[in-house]
Length: 413
Image 1 (cartoon, helix red, strand yellow):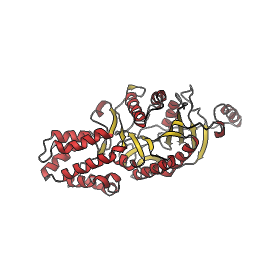
Image 2: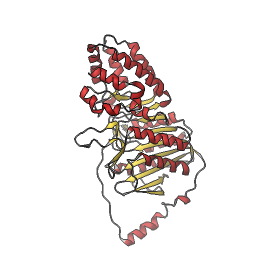
Image 3: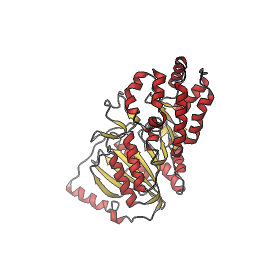
Image 4: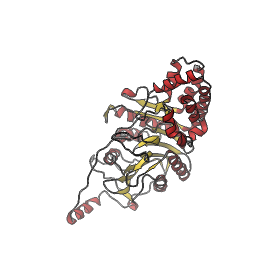
């Protein structure tokens, strides 16, 4: 979701424009002037959607990237859509000493791109793979996010229910749904020739079982935040610095660096002090996790009415996030273990806990988020909340594999 101010633009005279064009010759190059590198260890593709009120933070984050820039082993490439600039440009990020101005060369003018269209993600990946080949690829979608479903009607955020999931483009009114994100990454994996090594969302509320499962066929390591992200998002400068020092790191190691640096940045670090969460998942363990959740759900459905009511209460008391129907799954399991619910033993929750321990490979939190243990799940507290999203939930891969929606219905009715 992230929170941001608005910005304006200015007009140049003909003479000033000529001077500006002359000055740009030192930093803005034609794509042919930047040599296509040999295959590097990594290419980091940032799909930065500033076509909304986060626009100013896009410039901030690119300037942070420029504190490190691309290296001999890591390409840093951005597709930058800006509401202020009214255009979409592709940048090859290079190091500079100017923290206020983006100086990285524009290597492609992409035109008027709908950043809320999942096909645009695939086109960017195709272009990035063709121009900056690498052994490993990290795809980052940067923008507002709302987990697997539409943003709720909240004062000061948005009032419509058409904006959903991730990458909201105010110019078109479009966004990328969870199912479409899965499609985009499947197609991206085909372009790359293997699974996307690492995918992460620089967006809110995306560290969910439901979202991870939707992309699990196409991604090896997944990362994101259970809670909303502050407007400044990731600390690209500290993250890239750590990564650049160890460029041959595995996808899991890169995701761990990101988790550590993100949490540290909001724990008195470069981004101050705020309540945040971040975690990373090994999607190769998704199948085992789904099996454990399915078995656990079957056990819950067998409970009597009184016991089911206690399960719902344990869920209500679990760590919740800005969307109060999203809850931390490990914390929910801990509550169940401590509730002494008739018919529900610790053995029944242990299978899921064991699966989570293998699935969540990195996790961190600050402040009041101390019960955010890495993985959120849909856990509505009433049948009316369930009914508002049940039809769409039934179409998610996570439900089709685990029948979690049926478990919720049995608990809440």
